[in-house]
Image 1 (cartoon, rainbow, N blue to C red):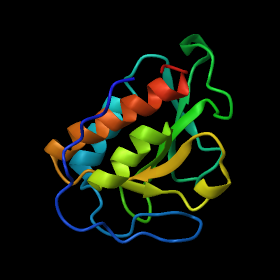
Image 2 (image 1 turned 90 degrees about the vertical axis):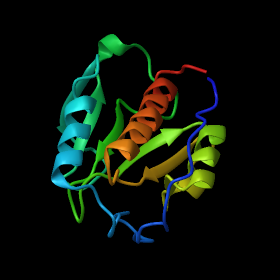
Image 3 (image 1 turned 30 degrees about the horizontal axis):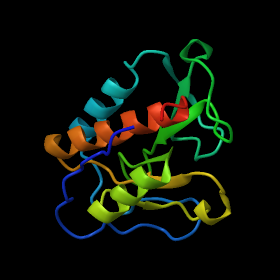
Length: 153
């Protein structure tokens, strides 16, 4: 996998919860940005929408079909989910450690509270896109998580 080469996210980190459920409280997506992200995400090949096995019932889980191929050991077919509450647009996903470090360094996300108990990869929250430009960055990170879930190195 190539480096993500993310731009620096503008502004301060949004307010988030430190405990479960891990949520973004401020600077969430507006409805148009959220809808554009969801439409793009659920149009990807080998993807379907379903109920999350790990998040709030209101979350929209992104499931990889069997036709996508094998999943990296330790991960599940729910490769990400996007939140609708308490605010729109943040998501949880898994990345390799180098990609996650870049996401953290550039301000696009933070470690999940359960990350310390995971031995081989990073579980993180990606902050919600605030505008169309940020949405393009979020798509890039999401595609990296998809590749990582499928074992692409």
